[in-house]
Each structure stands twice: as structure tokens, then as C-alpha cells.
Length: 387
Ligand SMILES: *[C@@H]1O[C@H](CO)[C@@H](O)[C@H](O)[C@H]1NC(C)=O
Ligand SMILES: *[C@@H]1O[C@H](CO)[C@@H](O)[C@H](O)[C@H]1NC(C)=O
Ligand SMILES: *[C@@H]1O[C@H](CO)[C@@H](O)[C@H](O)[C@H]1NC(C)=O
Ligand SMILES: *[C@@H]1O[C@H](CO)[C@@H](O)[C@H](O)[C@H]1NC(C)=O
Ligand SMILES: *[C@@H]1O[C@H](CO)[C@@H](O)[C@H](O)[C@H]1NC(C)=O
Image 1 (tube, rainbow, N blue to C red):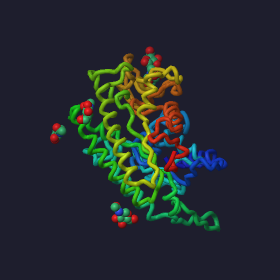
Image 2: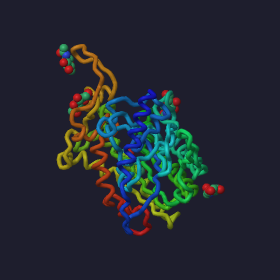
Image 3: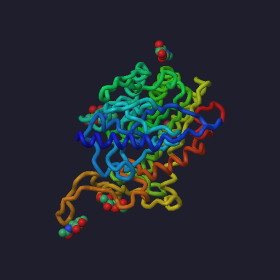
Image 4: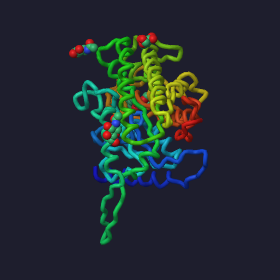
């Protein structure tokens, strides 16, 4: 265990070394000293795995990190590509207590996080205790410790190291959000009808807006980048568990995607309202739904195959009867551990719920251009109020 931690720390430092290249200054492009992210497993870089250490086993992380990195994927997430694009190190999970630096921001996202207080939390149920209200209070605490230092002794010498962002960096930072999918999932897997879950969207979004206002107020931040929720009805965990739900022309579960679209419609209006409320801020709504959905409508065009089938999973139409990393007994009686498919780089879905690194990169490439933003603002210009 200790050895593993040392190894993962080294790998983390190595990543920092290779990703902080020279900063290419362009007057056009924003220069964010830090990123603060709020969300769920779509952007969790190790939060849940820090809080509940037994969570992830190989082959998670196989493609990029070479071992489980706390990310629910074979490699990098959209938030990692966002950090790379600003020559910033990958975001440290706020909950990671092992040798972590927050100089360039922090990631408050944990897998299974919701916007609203969840019904049942891990280990007594499926959701993270770190829902959005808590993620906000973590930001408040981190900000109260801005510019704080720690003393590190190496041999005879003592060094003072700063581990948290400077006060002014909270103002200059990029704030990113990717949360909401689990609020819908909780409804779908509870005893609610599609219509009942659909009807919860305004309250979920209202809770999001309240948190946004608090985050805006406490941080002094000016740049906000808000992802909408993806096509949940295209994920094996929905497709396998709701076999009789109507399918659309590409095989996704139609009513589930309709709820996601309605949630996004309400969110888009709420973000427009926030833009009115805070005219000096730059608040971008990003249609991740459409960028992700293109992987299901035109998989071959982008070099993917079988987008509805999990790469790491076992059995059934969607390779999701048994989950990634689980064990099962095959028809011939052999005990197997469920591992990765041979070519994760041509697969969209990694483990039945989450996307592969290849799919995440595709989505990042699409959304960073601004083609999926409202207003139509590229990621590199996320600090600008005009566009
Ligand atoms: C769902 O079922 C639980 C009991 O299993 C019950 O307490 C709850 O009120 C139900 N919720 C709805 C929305 O029907
Ligand atoms: C969700 O609610 C909205 C507003 O009432 C409605 O227009 C839409 O058809 C509903 N969608 C589903 C799937 O129930
Ligand atoms: C904004 O934050 C300050 C602390 O920085 C707090 O005193 C104030 O109540 C907050 N205002 C609102 C509207 O939440
Ligand atoms: C049993 O099946 C697994 C995969 O289903 C296969 O890898 C293995 O070779 C089989 N073993 C025997 C003895 O047939
Ligand atoms: C399903 O998962 C298994 C690993 O359990 C993998 O070998 C196989 O290639 C996957 N199938 C598809 C179609 O990706």
C-alpha cells in the first residue's frame, strides 16, 4: 500500500513535469493561474478514491496513468485535457491528503456526487456524501487558507512551501462545473417514474444556481465554464437495467435522454439568468450533451466502434452484466476478473457508466473550440466577457 502511494506520487509529479511546458503568451488567450472544479465522476481526479480508498482496481487507469489514478476511466478525463490546454498540472483532489499541492487549484468533484442532498450515501447507498453544497464549503475552507505554507525538512535544511493558491488567484481562476447526472440517476434507480424524475429538474437546477451564487460571491471569480449533462440514456448502466425503455434511432434509451435534455434546457435558462445577475462575469454554458451524442450518431466518422458496449465489462448486449474489475464464473466454470477490451482507443464507453480516454479527448476537442458554447466562446477565451 505504502509503496503504491509512493509510486503514484512519483507518477503525479512526473505528469506535472511534462505538462508544465513554457507558457506561450498570447494577448488573445486567457492566462488562468488555477482551476477549481465542482462535479461528479465525469471530472473526479481522485476525490472519491481518497475518501474511500478501496474504490478502484486495475484496469482503471491502464491507458494513461498505468495504474488506477482515482479516475473512473482508462485514462484522462475532460478536466485533465482542460488543465493541459492551459499548461497547468492535473487538478489535485481536495480530499487527497497525501503530499498534495493546491497552488494551481483544486478539484472538489467526487464520483457519485449530486447537486441536491442525496437520499442514501456511501457506504449505505450509492451516492457520495460530498454533494455540491459540501463542495462549496470545501472551497470556502480552502480560500480561508490561501497562501498558507508548510515547513518541510530535508536533511538539515528547512524549506517553507506554499501549498494553497494565493488570495488573488481565486479571482483570476477558471471555475468549471460538471454535475447533475447523478441527481437524475438517483430518480431513475429510485422508485420514480420518468415523468417524476423529469419534474425534479427545476429544483435540481435551482439548487445549482444557489450554489453558483455562493461560489461566485466567496471566490470573487470572474470566469465560469458550465457543462450540461450528457446523454445518460446512451450508457450501458441505463440500457442494461431498463431493457424495455423505448430506443431511439441509434439505440439509446429515449425517455432517459429526454429527461437529460429537459434538465439541460432548464440549466441553460438558469445560466442565462446568472449572466444577467452578474454582468461583469464571464459565464459559459457548454453543450456537452451534443458533443457526446455525436459519438453515438457517427461513431465510425470519429474512429469509434460499438459505442453502446462497455469496453471493460462482461456479458449481455452491452457488456455490462458484470462490471469492470468484478469477478464472474464463465459457462465453462472458469473464474475470471473482468478486464479491459483489447482496443480501448476505439471504444466510447469504458465501464458501463463512464467514457474512455479516447472519447473524453474527442469531447474536449469539440467543446474547446466554442462550437458547443453559449455564448459561442472557446475555452481559451473563457475569461472574456465579450466574444
Ligand atoms: C419510494 O419507496 C420508499 C420505500 O421503499 C418510500 O419511502 C418512498 O416514499 C418512495 N418514494 C416515492 C417517490 O414514491
Ligand atoms: C419534462 O417536462 C417538460 C416541462 O413540463 C415537458 O415539456 C417534457 O415533455 C417532459 N419530458 C418528459 C420526458 O417527461
Ligand atoms: C458573500 O460573502 C461574504 C463573505 O465574503 C459574506 O459575508 C456575505 O454574506 C456573502 N453574501 C451573500 C449574498 O451570500
Ligand atoms: C473458458 O472460457 C474462457 C473465456 O470464456 C476461456 O478464456 C478459457 O480458455 C476457457 N477454458 C477452457 C478450459 O475451455
Ligand atoms: C467486453 O468486455 C470484455 C472484458 O470482460 C472484453 O474482452 C470484450 O472485448 C468486451 N466486448 C466489447 C464488444 O467491447
